[in-house]
Amino acid sequence: MATLLQKVQTLISANLHWLVDKALEQNSLAVINQYIREVEDNLEDLSDAVATVGGQVKTLRRKRDEYQLKADELDRNIDLFLKEGRDDLARAAQSKLNSTQRTVETYDQQLTQMQTEYQSLMDARLKLEAKLTTIKQEREQLEGLLELAKSKEIAAKSIKSLDDLAGVGDADVARIADSIRGRLDRASAESEMRAASLDKQMDDLLDRDQLDAQLSARKSRLGLAKEAGS
Image (cartoon, rainbow, N blue to C red; front, side, top):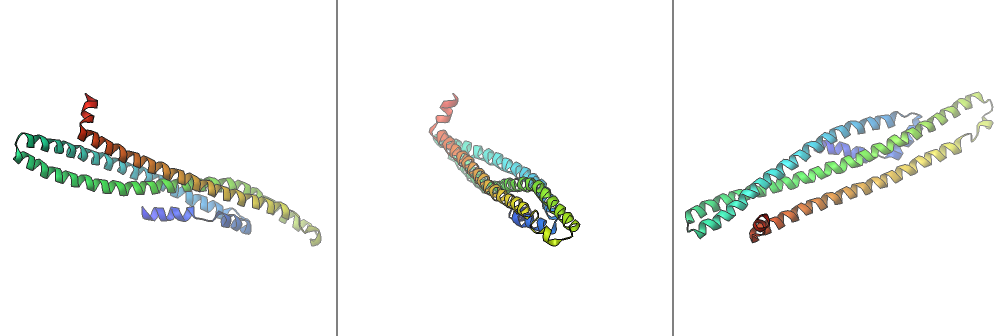
């Protein structure tokens, strides 16, 4: 998983300006096409990883909740045994409660780690998808720019006087190239904004789950959950 994220991060941090300049320098879309293939291949692997880790998060949460329910039941039973004077049963239940609570803590730790990994994968996928959309859009514009450059070369060969060739099409090439670079800057900024929004949504969701769990436990302790269900 770490290797995949490293590869994806390399693609995300790729300098699209450099790719565009390289394509212009080589008068070829080969470097752009290679980058697109690598992004698409890694996006597929990344999507599989997101699905796998997302499933593991759900499994861990379900198991943690199951053991938490067992712990809550044992806690209630201990009080009941003590009220009935059955200290032997209360002692056995307390021992089992201690073990169950340790299991809950272990699942909590694993869940926290897995949720962090899941969020990292989601964030990486979002950024890589944005990068792919941007470079594909600019590839079309770049293709037209390269065609213009090729046309200029053909025209150059057909003109006998090099002096007559000076400046032909240069302004158009520069203008289109600047336009491409400007859109790359804007797309990069929008990608960062979307990633930040995703981070906040994930944080809000995790906080809400924790608060709901705390309130549920408090209601159980106060007997409110029982009253609400009756």
